[in-house]
Length: 278
Length: 355
Image (spheres, rainbow over the protein chains, first blue to last red):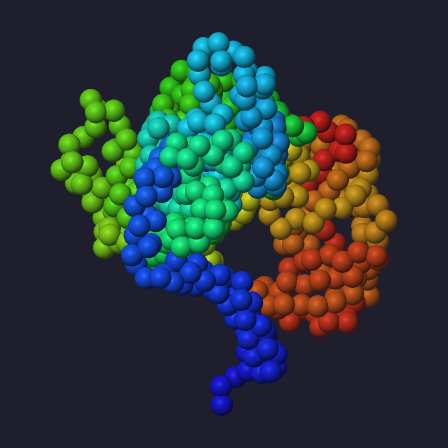
């Protein structure tokens, strides 16, 4: 006879809980995802291919990748710097900085977009100055990048802070007593110790950067082939009753997210045990 | 190497961690900083390493004031309480770190780094662990790695923060002797922090006893035991029990307890030799009692054999007194006359003595 585990629930309770979890998971996660792919492929691969090779679709895909390619590295550097400050130093305003890092999580994405319009739009604070210098931020690439940066800033920092706090400062102090400079300490000690959590944070940040809708929608201006990212392009196609096209682009976007998550899962398995405290 | 501290003070937000510390350590000495937690010993060690900086005062190493020089320019080895090994590096790379981060001009060639690391690992008796990661070795082995890593930079001074604190008792005893031998053999000058008086007394050439941010006595273990500088040291070192008393021109009177007064001639400590009178603290160690069976002031409560002697607990008036007695002298429940043979006395208003 196997010993009863100390926290064993009755058998029926375990079954009910598991079934409940699986049903909810299936209903709210798997089913919609499956629907996206089936809708896209309803008339076979031909229309899907056609929708994806449409110049506007290609422009949207390129724009999405470009925005992510700018926003993710910037937020990686910013996130590491923010997490480093918060986890390794005591300074006045530390709690405030921590709250600020989480701000994008708590405000609506629409607001995250609107602030840039208020700042840089034609009637915004810096609008006249920008116009005088012939600089376009809102309804152009810089606006899309700014909105994406704002929305995705917390991912890297939030993944790193708990881990870096748990690891403490003594490894860095040891490096200092051994003669290492600040940069040497960062690249030889701090960065390697957080590398798995960092990768996971970067991938999450990337998934969100490609998928962001609300904030980007506000600053985009919806110029087809110019300022439409993939999520915006999907919405336009859908509103025009081009369901196959909408679902084809949606399927591609979902695929990108799934690949990102799969990469993250693989990395977590490959990383040393316990290195992903976040 | 010589180390001299002058007028060192450090204040944190709401606490004075160090007050006017002065200390002189000679080359080759093994010094313990001993005190209860919160007495400032770790703060002092961190200031020596350059991991923290004093508000005031000098840290002179070979005559040069280093108080504001950051850690990486000091060449002082530091062994952290929990070792702080680099988790992602092998044992070999941990030890090599201090050599690899040197500026190119003074960095030894790869072959020499490898030779030096291997020599150190052999000296630490952990040569076979070279390729392991810190999480794959035991606590005692980690400590040796931390020590090898600190020694790799050929430090002028070696600092150890609670070097045995995280180890179990068995490993601790063995490492103590080994560390002492290493210190002598390598001709190191070392300071270590501990709250364990046995550890300090057994290992150190001199012990600095710290209390509330001050060094209250800095002396050899023997002299600290024989002549504690104040009541705090007397109470902290040795198995001494504290009694409230009053010193008169003739004798020490124990307050509130049915113990016989002790004539001044039998007392120890500066207060006994002087002419001072008034409220005093008295410290009596467990072996400084005499128990005479028969009717008297004490009842034996419990007894426990300890290496040829018996550790006994007596009820004397409202107090419990621990004393050593010969085996077979008394059974629990029996009465006796319990008398102190001597006591270390300190007048209650004695200001802090700085060793």
